[in-house]
Image (cartoon, rainbow, N blue to C red; front, side, top):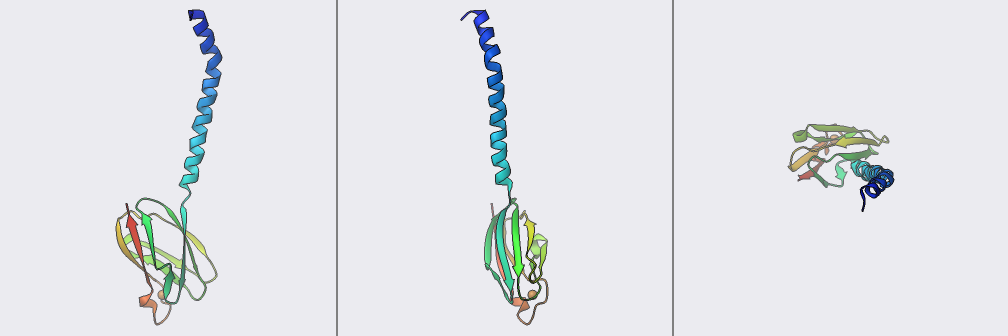
Length: 128
Ligand SMILES: [Cu+2]
């Protein structure tokens, strides 16, 4: 290929290469944003249990805890992880939760809700 043909080839292909780069760079970014959406975990509190009674989450990952209750006020409290979110009857709430420590943690209710209040617990497993 002559020098002139090479220049012509470069001049003709450059816009397509740049367009491809733009297309490729926006494609994965969209996927990344979708992946960044926190996973939703539904937790329902009622005298004197949580449903589910245990959850498993990954360290450093952010979750959207969808908390709800219908009877009286409760909370989801994980003392070891400095987390406490009040659950009000009839007012479901979304709370972001990012565990930063691996282990099995006890969650309990931080709002007195009756005679079985101290037995209202669940387990949060945080894994790598
Ligand atoms: Cu309680």
